[in-house]
Length: 130
Image (cartoon, rainbow, N blue to C red):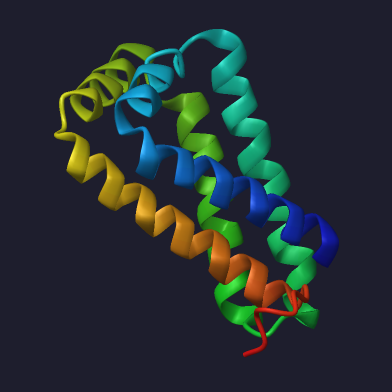
């Protein structure tokens, strides 16, 4: 499971870096989030992340934090399913109107979260030895 968590962390870092470098392209991609397929992709990704976080927690450097974030990921997946689509689309439209620098700053938080997941999973890169 820690390998799965490390892999998901790299995906999160890559996606968030894309948002840092190309915030307008990210917000235009988000406009398709409420389409059937992409909504379910987001739900499934959150559930897979939650499972990886939960089962990696016992062998991680921060078990309580990973379990808490796993619960938040499940809650996020549920909310995506039960949230009315017009309301979700209104939220996405609001984000699309944000200035590019604000989107980039939020995506930097995503990069930090991905790095935290990677570090916490215990995956080893020679450069990262905390």
